[in-house]
Length: 235
Image (cartoon, rainbow, N blue to C red; front, side, top):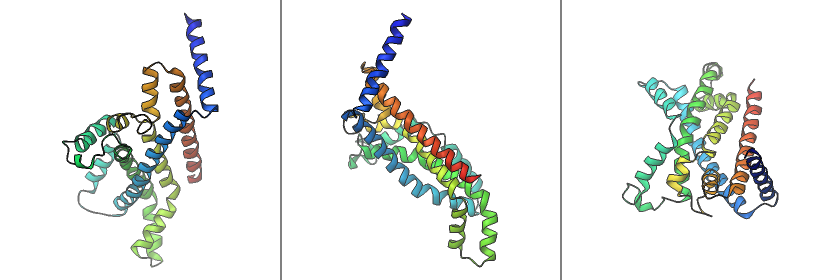
């Protein structure tokens, strides 16, 4: 029994390696969907999250502590909850149902944006808070305007902010709840790496699922190595 299991796993690894080396069209298509959706969502999450984190760090207003608490809480949003909320808005009877976004890559992007935004914003807030006082005093002493002061702070915290963006990518790239509920796992359209692994393994195509798993691990390793390199710059 054990020998049969080992033989099965070994054969699966061989077949997975062949699919990767031969650049299997379905494999490439699935990886392409994952990268397109996640990188687009990350771009907009960074575009909104970095200014949000910076604004919270350098400003003072009533309720700031509560706002920071809410932001930190949203970092742990379950993906299925985001998927459920997104579905309720994007379905035909939902508030945005007329836009017909459900089961499209755009719906997946929206869901992943919601997941990445609080992570980018909260980690940017943490990064900026560490340098804002020192850099802010320096900027004011040099007669800088508020905009110049903020640019100086961002420059000082740039590597930590980049690490925040990378962490946001790590959060969304391998998630499955939003991708399944908002994308629908449509072949050649919304099927990405996590949903394809679940589907292909469920129907018995172990080799393709394993090949996708290898690609997913390779990308995750690359992201972690990049994050470590950035953190090394911060030290």
